[in-house]
Amino acid sequence: MSFTHRPTGASAETAPRSAAEQLLRVDLAAAYRLIALNGWDDLIYTHVSAAVPGEPDRFLINPFGLAFDEVRASNLVKIDTQGRIVGESEHPVNATGFALHAAVHLARPDAVCVMHLHNTAGIAVSIQRDGLLPASQHALRFYGELASHDYEGLAFTPAEGARLTASLGANSAMLLRNHGTLTAGRTVAEAYVLMATLIKACEIQLQAQAGGVPLVLPPPEVAARTAEQLRDGGAIEGELEWPALLRKLDRLDASYRE
Image (cartoon, helix red, strand yellow):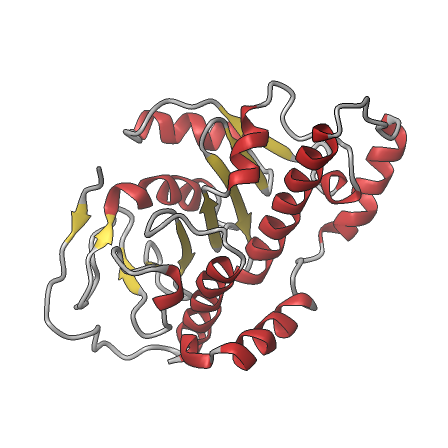
């Protein structure tokens, strides 16, 4: 069950948008389309949120009830920290679904984009006692930098928000036990590329485990050195990948830009 905040008017928001907000809308809509393209969506559920540039405590999120491949730059909804619609919108939002995102945004001002998915591989690995193993180069990106949070049920309370953000700390990714995955990016591109890497790492682990033979893991010193190399001194990830991903979307269906 989800509590939705209803539209306040019959037309899309009419307040002028800055060039920075419009660019963010395009990137965020692209992320939703890419998630759908990869089969990481879950009907109309889960969310990707982004903080609006120059507007403290204002965020963009998907219109609740639309499939991810229906999201466009123009139909993203602007909301506040309580999930209340700012301005006018034709669409409701899932306020309870945004609560998790709001907690992360408020605790982590650097988290411009928060992506939470119910992808199958991520949930499967989150269920495992040892979580993500340092079994692949993709997994090593998160070596020593992957948080986890135990499942507490459907109702997301402020108290759980405090516990979740404490678990997340300064990490860029998290396994939500029995629930899904979460990434926090300084850009939409970074959140997406981190999620793609995490999901790939989970898929590799599950396939390796399905072989039913012992796994060979690199020694801790190699894992730590590789993780440092992959994180490249804290560089913002996705800057090279994102234009290529947008070109791919444009070849398939550029309506996300509308």
